[in-house]
Length: 441
Ligand code: GAP
Image (cartoon, rainbow, N blue to C red; front, side, top):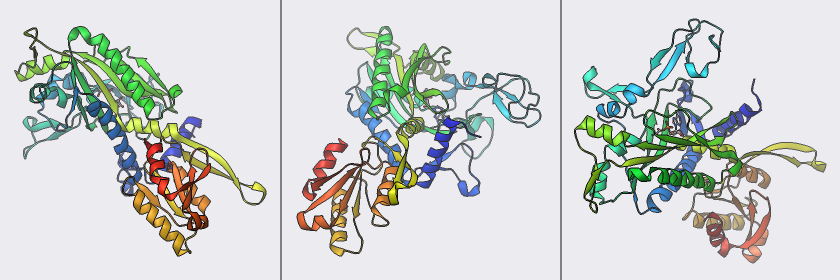
């Protein structure tokens, strides 16, 4: 039983599987719960989102630098960060079916699955534990990082000095994070292994409000630049603050199940640097050359989930259309179109020979394909009716299809078909590259 909103996610899941975008992990073994693999087209979209974020953060800002820190860190990091002590869920377990639930999610004292009696609430820390080295004891215990942020804080001094940065400046990184979520779900919305794109901006304490507002706006504009519709994005102020935060706001997307977070912007104060100074015994304060004063910078963090942003992008682009064909338009079919922004589309253009039994046409189409391939990820397709081929590209969001036909052999022109308007225009072969460059910019 699915309501309308579940329906959209279900349809997207099946499209993602059918078209090589996202698959359940280890599916041939029945699937690994709450983990997903990105297929040949999914990895393209994901990489594009990551690249756009990196460009916005690192290349477009003179005062932000990149980092790629290790997933496994010294276990004391997570004591200092507060995760060992404060990063926890309060769980109850059903005495009948043994399912576990977050206490906060439950409205009644009975199991929502089977109506059974629940246990008393217990603390549960979602950090994954493992052991480093050959001995499995408490001394060798390490954690899979639940956020990438801590790798930035512990490197604050080293990065600042080696790159000779002055405050305000930022450090950005993209990487995997892990949380043993009790209630994973909604496809790639909440998983146990996911990717974060986090940026930590180090500032003077008295400028925290200004920078907090600055980053909120910058980040919202970036999500809009991906082509997500404005009416499907909003801010939500945090009422309940995380253990490290002085203020926080989420950027929320209007998911089919509810409005929910895709990115958090937090004013973390000097929590992280003061804790790491204390726990490591290394003073992480910053020395201001001009005033000759030492102080602990405040941090404004922007923390985005790559997977969640990708889910928002896909849902926002997903559309179903009824098409008619056959004699007197009597055949009705549902067609799926991903109206992705051309810069997000995994395949930028597809090249078709109108027919495959005419060698001159095939040769021309292959030539065009080979040339475009030098610059973009493009596809060549000669199988099936031309309408089918358009539809296959619509489903994966390809913005342009280039068809070589009989006229091409006469006048060196092709038809370019636009995904969103389905309009076709004729352009010269020599101008295709320029045309695409303009559209994809
Ligand atoms: N460093 C701060 C931090 O980690 P968070 O709000 O816990 O803050 C930031 O996480 C972002 O990471 C979220 O907005 C979300 O997009 C993503 N995220 C968190 N948990 C996730 C999960 N279990 N699955 C997928 N994405 C997740």
